[in-house]
Image (cartoon, rainbow, N blue to C red; front, side, top):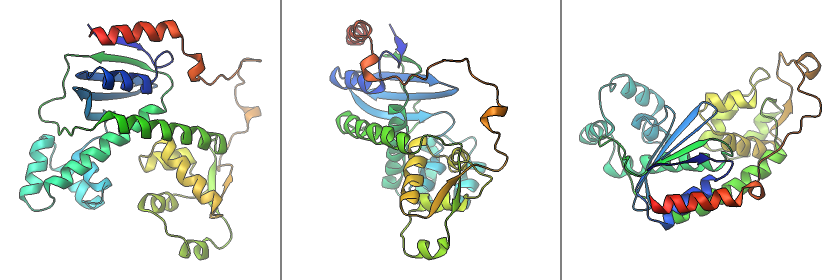
Length: 277
């Protein structure tokens, strides 16, 4: 029997802890606000994860620097009928990459997906103990203990960044003489990608979408640039002031779910159910 619930009552951290402690095998499916994630486990280890339409092997290899954007695009266009494993073997046989490159790319992708899920505070989940990833997917076993610890650390950092940079609808512009500052600062590939999209027409949220970045990733990069004095926040071009927008119901509070809001009775029932699966 499948385990079902909502992240309001049972967080991603709690789910992963239970799966780890009970050494469960199966697939966890989570959906929220139009996004859907699938995370697979074998005997308590993470073995596969995907979020939405993300997860093409060419994109994974590009992200870890094993393919250029042009190479990745060409491979995507010519591999529509290739499975992950078949495509990986083909690239290995062609001498483009090594088997270790494939494993590393899949591992980075899986961890990126799972760390995003820690920030989800609402969404329906379903754990199917009999559902396994398709055989043509590349699976890599990863211990959950370190994943849970790192995910919890990132969640705390995300909450701090959310306080420092709450509005992703703002745009960015460079401060005076950014070229001088940029010459004195070493930026990562992801930071340079963000820099390339900075102009008054692009909101921070749009820059994140252009670069396929999570809210955590874009907040971390933008906050660092703000602290370094490279950029400053501005209203994006075409901004509609709040007075011109439909107003919310007067007095409607904005409540942020917290761990203290979790219903103990619901959590206890879910723990009992997943242990019986």
